[in-house]
Structure formats: C-alpha cells, structure tokens
Image 1 (cartoon, rainbow, N blue to C red):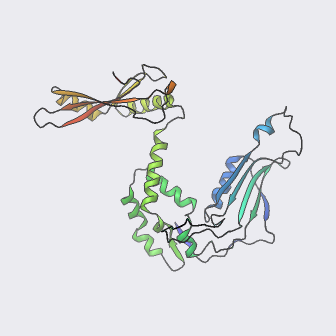
Image 2 (image 1 turned 90 degrees about the horizontal axis):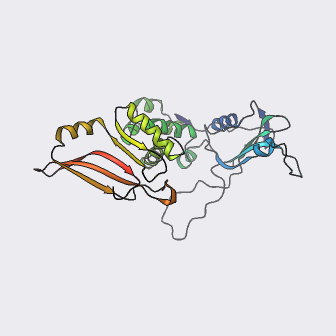
Image 3 (image 1 turned 90 degrees about the vertical axis):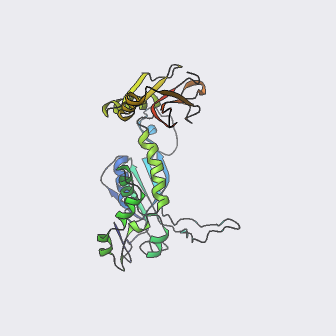
Length: 303
C-alpha cells in the first residue's frame, strides 16, 4: 500500500459533476463509496432511507413526490474550521480548512438507477505529503489493518510488516508507504473494538451464547448450559481441555470457589438482574498457589 504524491486531481467541465453508475441496491452504492475512499477518506455526513415510504402503497403522504429510495452524503475530511480550545497544549496542526469537496449517491426512483453528484474541487492538495501526514489514512489501509488484527497479529508483528525491507526498496520521493503512519494507538484501538465484535455472535445475547456453546464443544471444550434463557436458573459454565486435565491430575486437594458479582454491564436478564461469575480453583496446600479450572456465569449471587 503506497501513496503516490503529486498526482493530478480529477477535474471535469462542470462542478458538481453528475453521472449515473450501474446498480440499484445500497450494497452497490457502498461499493462505489469504497472505491472513492481508496485515495481520500471521505466522511459520511448523512444517510436518508425512504424504502418504507416507497414500498408502502397505502401511504397518505402529500406534497412533493419522493425522488430517491436512499441517499448517502459524504464530505471531505478537511471540511469545517478548527476552533482550538482555550489554553490548549496541543501543537499539532488541524486538517480542517473549510474544503467544499463532497459527493452524494442516491437510488433515483424515476430512472431506477444510482446517480452521483460530485463536487470535486478541493481547496487543498489531497495528494500532497502534508495531506498524507495529517489526514486519516484511506479505507483500504484500515481494512488491511483490521484483517491483520483479526488473524491474531499484535502491534510488534504489524510494525514489522509495515517496516519490511521490500517496502523500503520501493520507497521514493514521490511514493511513500501508507504503513509508516500506522501507530500503536491505532492498532490498540482496533484490537479493543474487534474483541467486542468477535465476541458477539448474534444481537440476541442468548442466541449468541448458544452459538458460543456449539463452537466451544466443536473445539473440544466442556460446557454446562442447561438453561440459556431469561430465567432465574440461567447458567453457562465452561472448561478448557487443559483445565479439565489439571483438575483430574491435581484436584484431589483443596478446591476453592471464588465469586465476582456485577461481571457484565449490559444486564441482559429481565428486571435489570445482573450476572455473577464463579471461578472454581484448585490450590496446592504446600506452596499455596492455585489455578482456575472452570468458570460459570449464573443469575444467582449466592449459589
């Protein structure tokens, strides 16, 4: 992934430049947006959806007829003007300079096509080195980084990839690798957000737990989940193969039960009831050290 500096910006006879592209669906419109974000990280400003009104044949709405099924508005990330807080210690310059560039894409009802209106004239050079250093990286860079994180790579491995000798050989005065602007904070933020996304298998908590139960069993784990519903008897216990082996080999001595209340924040049980986490541990009576051999989430705070 490289950024070519000093390239010519697109220019057309009219501004805004209006044209149609193949397709009618929102997914096809999103594909066009992704292509636009390959060089400039356009920011979504608005999304309008009239699909319910269009599909309703009994709509009693009067006035001007609908022009589009949906419409997406995107603006240049340099739009607006930065107003620094009073007594701010930050010295980093702002990217905002009131850039008027923007574009919108809509599913036009009358022609049944996707129509684009593109105000292409920037008041800055989107292909300059200064723009690259200040502005957010293109969407394709973010997608590449997310793929690396999902595959299990951490900051050190990702940093080594972005500093690969092969990339340095292609580097020149007009071609710079995008990876040099990937920071530790960016990677840390994506790791934190992706953990939440990967943990949620379904919007419904109980369906998500049922899916997790199936995946854990396929992976060789041991689970106990007789009640995964909104019930006072809710329980979900899990044990890895390694924990089961440790319990069989060293669980003849001291077994401890540790409870942690208020272990979740979403309170997915009815009436705001909270989930408690119980940890079953085995402890060596001589050295005094132990390890967890099982976890259980229950709706009870006492059992």
